[in-house]
Image (tube, rainbow, N blue to C red; front, side, top):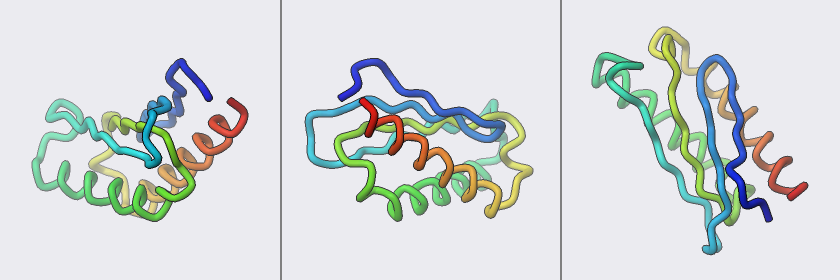
Length: 99
C-alpha cells in the first residue's frame, strides 16, 4: 500500500493516484477552461477518460485517481488519448502492485 501520491505523466495527461479504504477505484477529472477552451471539447475528453476508466476499473482496486489534462489535448485524436490513458492505467497497476 502506498501513502504518497503516485504520479504518471506524459504530453497529454498527468495522473495522480492514492490508496483509499474502499474496495473500488474512484475517478476525478480536472479539465480546465485554460487548458481546453471549448466546453464541447472538454466534454468529449471527459467522456473518453470515463470510458477508458470503465474498461480498466477492475484492475485499479482501492485507488483514487485524478486525471488532469495538459495544453494541446484538444488537438489530439481520440486514438492518441486512448493510448495515453492505457499507458497510464498500466503504470498505475505496476506502481500499486510494488507498493
